Amino acid sequence: MLRLALPLLAATLALAPCAQAQDDSSQLDEIVVTGTRISDEDLALMPAVTLTRRADFLALSVTLENDTREAEARRREVHETLRNLVADAAKQGMSMAHGDEFLIPVTAANHQLPLGTGSRSDTSRVSLYLKRPLGATDNVAAEIARLEKFVDNARVVGRTVVEADDDIALSVVNPERYRFEIVPLIAADARKLQAAIGPGCRVNLTGLASRVSWERTDEAELTLYLPYKVEITDCQ
Image (tube, rainbow, N blue to C red; front, side, top):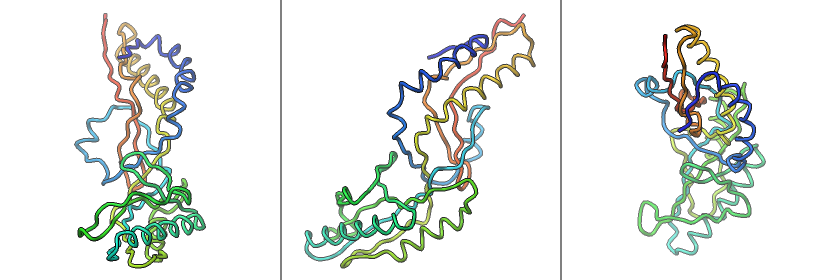
């Protein structure tokens, strides 16, 4: 665990670009955040210094199910519907992705996703996300309506049915990129804390080496943070 005294923070921050350069692989990570926003009880457990940012994408969970009698025909009809979804989404500034926590793009080259069993043993099903970029001034309700309209107008093949979930998820690309926005905020807060309690005290910070964490705190916003802790010692 990294343990920093306040006088060392400036030197530590100066090394931050090197640490970021060693973690280039995280730039490809896109995480999906499902469920409702964090409860007040959990919010109270977050550290004092956080960073709130709008999500990069709205993500609507979509399920395709097919009950054609013959298994190979079911597979073909679902995959052809997926191909249509990918093509039509691209024309409307949307995209498709799959995954439980980290999202993987679904494209024309990899749209033949593995299928699971549907509501009956003789049906096939697959779930994925329909995504739309979310700008700083975009109207969230209007963007959600666009996603839902796209699903309603989906070009299906055979007996494939496309349905959308009620809840909208969020996704953010490479949350680690916010580390070096969060650390200076923590450092500034620590300096204010030391000034408030007296220069004779030593303020130690731990947890700055942890990966960035996040919680959904609004319909389209995530609060990002480092799970750091503050210890005050050596007061005279």
